[in-house]
Image (cartoon, rainbow, N blue to C red; front, side, top):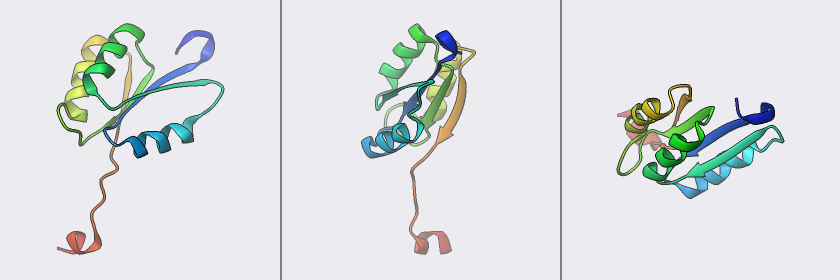
Length: 96
């Protein structure tokens, strides 16, 4: 865990609205939440700060969440990974 019992989490998503909604739901005195919409900036941060947990959007342009998970595991092996996705299909697509 981060210093003084604070949990340090990172959220990575290319959709700004999704980031804002997610971060708004985890605001807590004991949670430090940093968010990125760019995978390379996230990796630079993770390399330096070793977050406790990273929430990674699966479908992103450039490096996707799976690729980012592999990369962050190399620079911060203790970081826990949670995959997220805001992807929704309409009902007609699902029925096919």
